[in-house]
Length: 217
Image 1: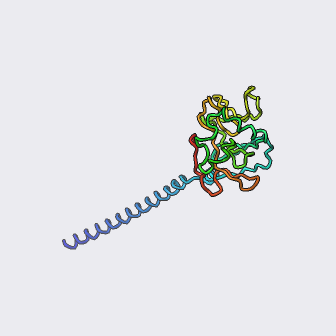
Image 2: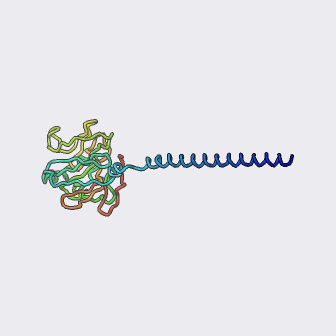
Image 3: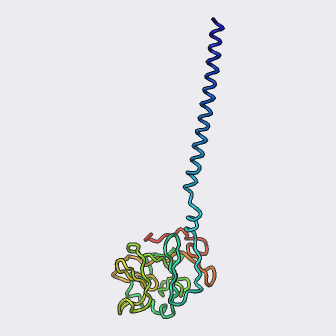
């Protein structure tokens, strides 16, 4: 009788060990499967190379922009305008002060390190002849139209930008005219000149301010 019980206990022990082995294998395989599915999921949350490139600084060659013309580039999915202003347009900017809501850009719409970009003269630019702006109306985000010719809108029009959505007007420094819906001047993005003809938009020369955002973003 004792031998029979010993045999039964021995047989039960063998079955129990097999079950534990099978259970351990299943758990290990399940964990491995979870990890293998989790890794692609985590990887999918990382920004793509394309997204990183879109968020990074962009180079703009200004050598072929004729005086009076404007080109549009893209930075972080937003239009960046570069306007080559004429000597006549620059001379007219200081005379705009009485017509503007914020002629000295006291409500900052440019990075802190760019506060003194010829604001008194109204240029808002590192090099006065080249204006760099984010081309999005500060009212409701429409894209203004470039209308540089004085009188092209009406006899009092000094030349600048007109928002087609609600009629806001900006001068040729992106400063909003008084008594129009937009509350702020158009933003000046962080930028600097890598050479006489190459602008890098999206950061300053000391690598600061690439994460700066104006009030309207």
